Image 1 (cartoon, rainbow, N blue to C red):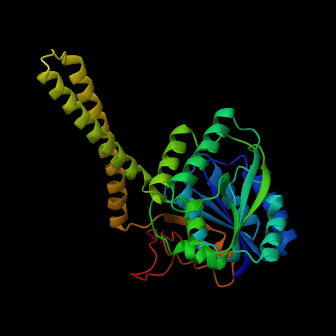
Image 2 (cartoon, rainbow, N blue to C red):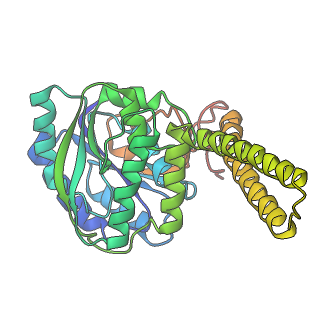
Image 3 (cartoon, helix red, strand yellow):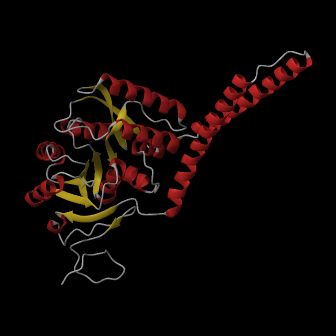
Length: 344
C-alpha cells in the first residue's frame, strides 16, 4: 500500500503526457515524498499515447501504465484506474492539465485539517472554454442539482482527493452507466469543496464533443433521478385533462348545432398525442435499457496489459473488483487465473 495514488484516464493525449508526468511527479514529491504511484490508464487511444506511457513507465518506477482492450469511455477508464490503484489517498485528475497538479499539497492539507474523506474541486473560472460550453455546463449542473435526489455539488468535476475508505465504498457500486462525481456524492462521508481556477488545455483538443456531453448529461440524470419518468407521468396527466376538456367542447358544440371544423384540429391533437407518447416510450426505453445492461453483469472494463508492474517488489499482481485483467505477460498455466496470450 502506497501513501498516494494519482489516477489519470487518457484518450489521445500523447502531447500532454510528458508535461503531465513531470508536473504530477513534482507535486507528489512535495506532498508525500517518494511514496506515491502514478496510474495512467490508456482508454483505447488511436495516437501514440500507449507507447509514450510505456516509455514513461520504463523510466520511472512510480508509474504504472494500464492499457484497456478498447475505448471504454472516460468514466469506465477512470473506474479501471481507481479499481487497480493501491494508495491510501487517491487523487483523480484528467490528462489535459486543465486542473493544476500543483494544487495537490493544498488539497491534502485541507483533507488533514478538516478530517475529510473527499476534497472536491469547484471551478471558480474556466479558462479557454467557449461561452456555449460555459453556459451549458452552468445550466447542466443546476438542472442536475434540482432534479436528483442526491446533493451533487455544482461546478465540480472529477478533480478530487479521496480517502481509501471513500474509494472502497465507491468500488462497491458496480453499475455500468457511471457518473462518478454523483456516485462519490452519494456515498456520503465528510466532503469539502476546494475552489480553484481551471486552466486552458495544455495541448490537443477536447475529448468531450457535444454528442458525448449530451450522453454524459443524460447518464447523470437517469442514473440519479427519476425526474424524467415523473415528467412523463405529469405530461400524461396534463394530456388526459386536456382530452376531457376537448370532449366537453365537442359535446357542447354538437348539442348547440355548431359545425365543428375538425380536420386541422384533429390532426393537431393526433400529432401532439403521438409525439408525447413516443417521448414517454423513449424515456421508459432508456431506463429499461439501463436495467438490461445491468442484468448482464459484464465486467466494466478489460485490461489488455500493464506496463511498469514488474518493477514492484515480487511483481505487481493487482486484483480487480469490477473488471477483468487479461495479463498478456502471464507465464502460469492457472486455468482459473488471468487470461494470457498464447506462447510458443
